[in-house]
Image 1 (cartoon, rainbow, N blue to C red):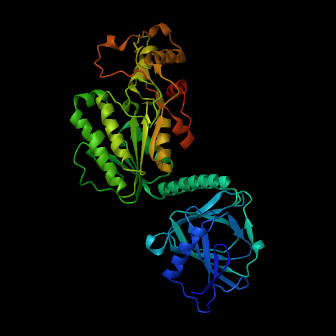
Image 2 (tube, one colour; image 1 turned 135 degrees about the vertical axis):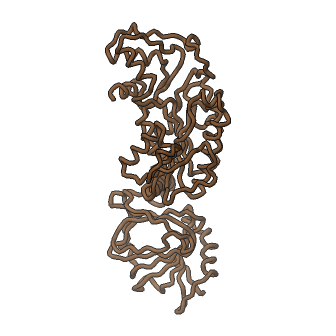
Length: 466
């Protein structure tokens, strides 16, 4: 093809019968490296005054197209090669629509047409993105309006930061879209966390499928699944977008006394089920525990090496390790100690105190209570936003069981002398380990989800109000 170059990265066809094939596209691919903005175009219209403008445009991944809109012009885009997100904004810069673009074979949208002035840009996802753009002529610079809320192309640092923030916003929106379009699977809705999570999801209007290990509890939307058995033939329900694996053997004594049985549930089949789900592009959320750490140091970060000292902790640490290898479709939520209104220990304390009975809470055992409601909210948000990796949930400090008991006694107005603390060693209970610290670092919870953990006494107050 005979072409003429009118400016950096802009080429015009000089032929009356213009043909474009792989040779011409390869020409653009080679020439684009000579441009500072990493973009170029081959115009197949003859001049700027033509009534119809048709351009093969090539953008590299680092390209920046400043958000803009065309006044009184129609514009269409047809994908030739590569992938990108077309992002549309209102006049204030808020995202109103995202179109994931790819060629026909990709299964994504390969064409769009803009029939009215609207701010838009492209985020390039592949090394090269090539498309045919068609719009009306003649060309006038004044017909294109740049968004004042977006950085100019020459402000490189501002452009880099804007693209980073825009990419994060697009990611969050697309993840929520995935969550909203499919059904949710809750594995282990018989349990405290799974049952409360299922109630929350129903309240949010989600189409819900639950599993139970109790045959008598099976119903239309409640199907049988026992992680203690062979799950290799279990069929994943259709249209699932997100799954929560809440089924677990979490009683430490049972894990210690039955390590093979508990490991089958907590490690082998949890990982196996997660692998099956991820293979179908289903996002998986799994609760975990602070006991993946030894507790000798407080406020462990989520990326610190795990060093459990209990059987349950070892199993959860191994599960976390294998689950994280599954990639970006797995989110793990580590809790310190989840407490609900029906927690037997606290209920028994309250009942005994109200009957003027002495209680003996441990003075040398720590807890960092997390309200069941907030635990479920974090799980819900991690699934909704498809936030991979590890999120940790914990209050701001550890307190002893004795401190919690005294606080409860004070709040319900009973004689504080009824609280007679003692050391756990005096109880005759055989405990595998007693961590010195249970509270976890929660920086990612705050920054990635914008959730502030409830304080210790706020959690305890919430139990007393129910």
